[in-house]
Image 1 (tube, rainbow, N blue to C red):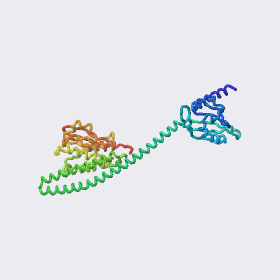
Image 2: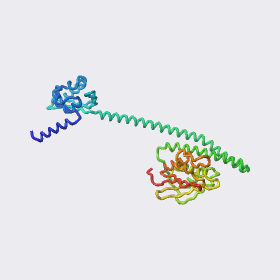
Image 3: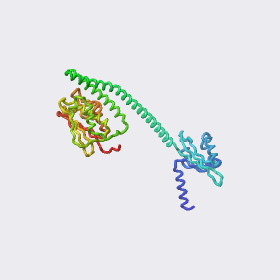
Image 4: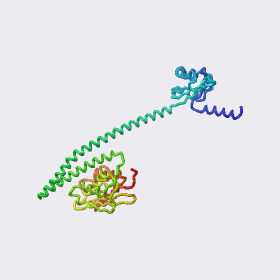
Length: 378
C-alpha cells in the first residue's frame, strides 16, 4: 500500500469518526461490520466492540421490532428513510432521521449502510417557526378585528355627528334670521344675546369637528392624498368658518404670487380654522388678526402665518403646546386648546410640514404653518 492510499484511508476514518451522524454497515444477518465513533455517543458502546454484534443486541427488543421490517426492505434493495426517537444513555431521547441505503453488488444485496442524524434542533426550530406562524396569524386576526372596530367606531361617530350637526346648523340659521329681525326692530339687547348664542353654537360645532378629526387621524393607516388647491379659496373657507361677527377682524396679506399648493383641502381647512379660532379668542375684540401668506424655496413650502395681538402664551404651556390635552389655563387667560393645536400638529405632520410658534409675548402671538411642496414619494 503506497503512502497516498494510507493517507486517504487515515483521513477517511478521521472524517467518519468526527461527524455527529451515526454511520454503519450491517450485513444480511443483521450483524455490524462497521460503526463510527458516533455510536458511542448515541448508545454508550465502543464502536470497536460492535463489530459482529447483532442489531437486536444493540437496539434492544422494542426498537429492533420497529426497525426490523425496514431493515428487511433495505436488504430487498429498497431505500428506506424514516424518523425515529432513539433512546440513549441516561434516558436521553433523540429525535432522529434514519436512512438505510442498500449495498447492491451484481444484483445482490450483501448488506446496507446506515446513516442516522440527530434532528432535535431541527424539530425545535420547526416548533418555534410553527409557534411564530400561529402567533403571527393571531396578531393579524386581532389587527383585523381592531380595524373593523375602528371602522365601526368611525361610522358611529359620523352618524352621531350628523344627527347632532343638522339640528345645530338649523338652530344657527334660525338664530341668524332672528338676529337680523331683532336688529331691524332696534332691539339691541336681544340682538346681542342671539349673537352670543350663535357663538356658543359655533364652538359646539367646532368641538364636534375636532373630536371626529382626532378619531380619524389616530386611526389613519395610509398617507394623505394631496391635490392642487387654490390658496385664496382655502383661506376664504377657513375665515367663513369663523363666527360672522368676527370675520371682519381677519386681514389677509399676500407676500407671494403663488396661487395654488398641494394639500389635503379638508384637513388644512380644519388646521387653519383652529389657529384662526385661537387667535380671535385670545386677543382683544377691537384688534385685527392678520393672515400672512408667503412661500419658501428651501425646502419648497407654502407658509401661512396667523398673528394676533393677545397677551401671549404662558411659558409653562409652550413645551406641551401641540400635545393632546395641552390646555393653557382658565378662561380667557389660557391660549392652548385641548384638541385644537394637537390637531394642527398632526395635520401638518401628515403633510410632511410643520407648525411653529414664531413669537409670543405681551404684544401678541404668531403661528406659522409650513406646507411642504417637495415630492414626498406619494
